[in-house]
Image (cartoon, rainbow, N blue to C red; front, side, top):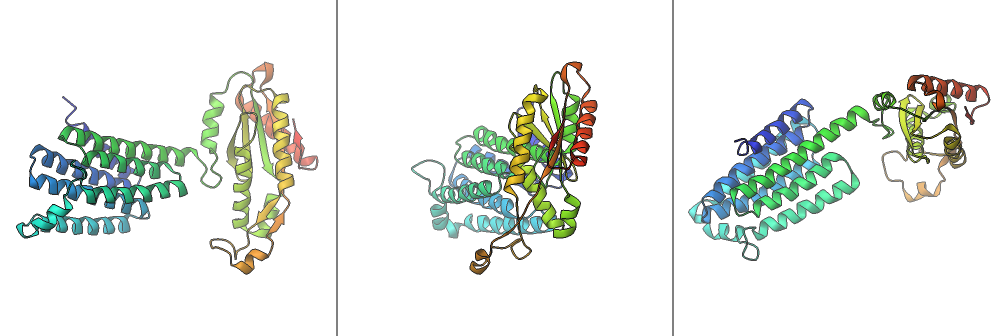
Length: 359
């Protein structure tokens, strides 16, 4: 009973969710998928010359529209203006192709590939769109970019289908992929720290609530971070936080790092005793101390340096971190108590001269 309405439910749910979170590109992509689903279903239900023209128009318009949405910025006015203009131009082109005088050109546009339903022009358009989507996915590996890539795959399967049900299934699958990618993006915003890429304090709170057994928690603080900010500026401070965050993300021993707030981080070692976690924390501290930090000057930020600028060595600043660690141990202490103990150990490390690990 619900199967015929399932595509409509998916498209409406995706559009409403995109509207709620102000993801205008996803909203318009859902509308385009719904419109394409309607057009292909009608065309495949009544085969003929007009059906091939509609399929060809969809095979060219859908990848062009989705590619434009993928590369447009997430600004409502610009996204809607470009999309409306593009769709209007495509509708006008399709109307002109439907005229008897344009029959020779329509035959060229609708010429199928190797005797199948997929037109040659549509295949070329999809190939170009998928190439651009793959490039964008490599340069920006984010859920929505991945969703756009697989949506194009679904559109390609739909225009190559021979029955309305198959085309609808492919486009509904594309809509589901976009819906899931939107949920993943929303989850990443809620539980991730945008600056460092680490899980945020909200994610830490939920993880602490589920801890049980023997585990170790470490608190990490960047030494003299306020002085660093005052000396080199907040942009350099953000660069330093990103660098330290990348090192924390690669900590060994199965540790999972979180952004606690400001210049403080937390690392949780599940099912790990304190003595087993200490070597990995010491390796982290030593790695940050010995590598240092390559300070990007304002002239370098945001643009490619000239040949002369590349000859000047970048300013390197020595940075360090202090670390405090505590474990639940046999007492099975609650997570908040272990976190407080690690925080107290951190302050002992800072009072003891910084750049050290204390328990």
